[in-house]
Image (tube, rainbow, N blue to C red; front, side, top):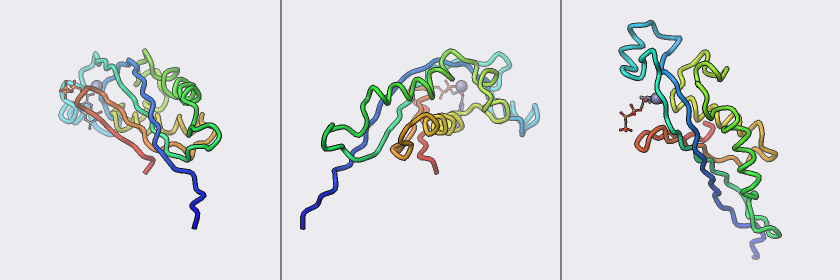
Length: 143
Ligand SMILES: Nc1nc2c(c(=O)[nH]1)N=C([C@H](O)[C@H](O)COP(=O)(O)OP(=O)(O)OP(=O)(O)O)CN2
Ligand SMILES: [Zn+2]
């Protein structure tokens, strides 16, 4: 029997952005916030050079040889990530973080939701991975 399905592959693009934040939860009181977040709860906040990787999973189109043109993916990521987060104070400038802590976990969910919103074929989105530092990494797959 001939397998007529196109092969599927994973396609990733990465971008970096700079932002500042303070870890502070509206669900905790002042003492609890200090206890949970330690130095990251300091009133002055702090900054990160975040690296974000967006991965798609889909069929390689026979005619184009692509899942999605990287130029398109770049445009989506600029709309969903750079325009909203680069050189921003996450807690003050981004509505989403006004009622939840700006942890990397929550940031991956935010980026996932924004990517879904701007992509023409949102079902291609497979994973959002954010490096807060070289050592602190969170991955989200929409679960
Ligand atoms: N589960 C999470 N824990 C922590 C988060 C988070 O988003 N999710 N975030 C922080 C702070 O934002 C903090 O800034 C982390 O950075 P840093 O203090 O630089 O981290 P390290 O001490 O691990 O520094 P390395 O250079 O990466 O070793 C804290 N916790
Ligand atoms: Zn931080």
